[in-house]
Length: 229
Ligand SMILES: *Cc1c(COP(=O)(O)O)cnc(C)c1O
Image (cartoon, rainbow, N blue to C red):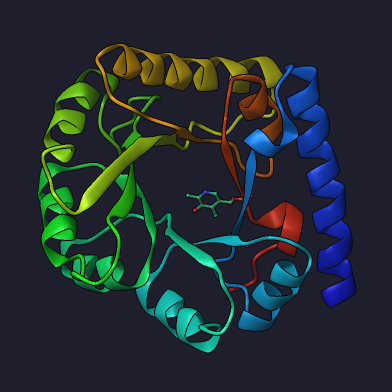
């Protein structure tokens, strides 16, 4: 397993770097986050040894166990799942980043519950680009108000936007969604927000995401193989 993960990691990093160069961007401007839900602590350790320092988890209980098991490693943990309000305390205490903030109430709880001895919690606003009712995330027209609320909160640091666009195998369709998120980020910057993170792109569409300006791609399957759990 270790060799397989190391090999996939190298292949992936080469593809990320090539996509960045095609977009006239510095390869190091794109962070590779390993989306490790359902994968073991050993798999995470193998990816860490292959050079990945950022890991994303979706389920609180599962994540807390892995974070405890791997506490000796200097990993940056990102919560990338959907957040229920009864989980905000555990999330605020264990993660450095939360990518799916989509309501003021959740943001307020995270800020209130962020332990004093830790630095501010880095957050991204999740945007529902495809406007599907089944999807979480705020609608594009509501992003500005949520951003204004978040920057008032003392223990949060707003870093940017994240999205999970409707899956597509067409490069042009993928690109169109990501370009929309990048434009939204630009409009926030024009309002004076200091943002440095565009969390977009997964195994199927990270090259289009990088072309549109992604600074952080969240990759599971292409790194760890298919999820079984
Ligand atoms: C699982 C997951 C990913 C990774 O998806 P893959 O298609 O396996 O690369 C990225 N982002 C989020 C929010 C996820 O839940």
